[in-house]
Length: 187
Image (cartoon, rainbow, N blue to C red; front, side, top):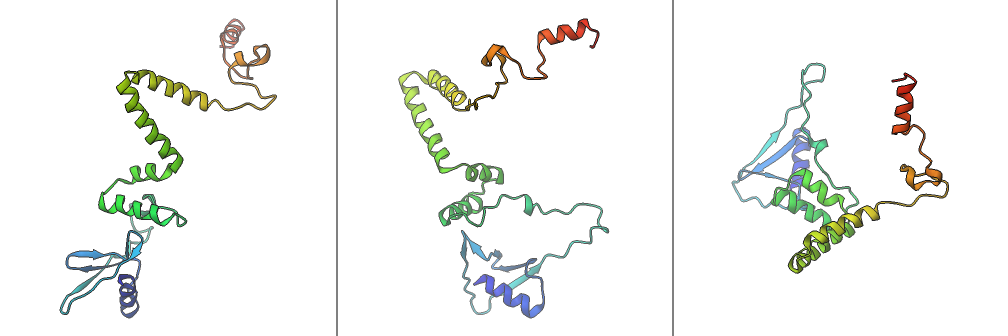
């Protein structure tokens, strides 16, 4: 296994394990692919190169912030299921999806993905029936209605027309207040 080979080389040659890369046949040997440990079979006479990334200079010596961006890359939580982890590795390593797209894909729940797929299926049906624009408008109103939320008894709305006696929130700027401030010379 590549991981064990790296640990063996790091232990015998006193090299830092985190900064070490093994190269064989022109390819970097990774510890795992798709979440599974890799096994490498070396032929007699093959050479494995050990490349060690040098330590950056101390912060007080260097004039620039040397960030590899590793902390900025999207990473799955450790508790992620195995099928999601495999899908992540296929999308990132094989298909070379950008991190921003991976973040969007894996931040949505399965319920939300199902809703999106069903919406697009129904959109194609609505388009064939000639009611595509009506479908999009209806979806917009449905989203607005779904996100209205519910007020608790005693809460007042930000929109005064929904409150008893058209009561406004404190600090609301309206035409009456603006007129009063101008007449009193406060503006």
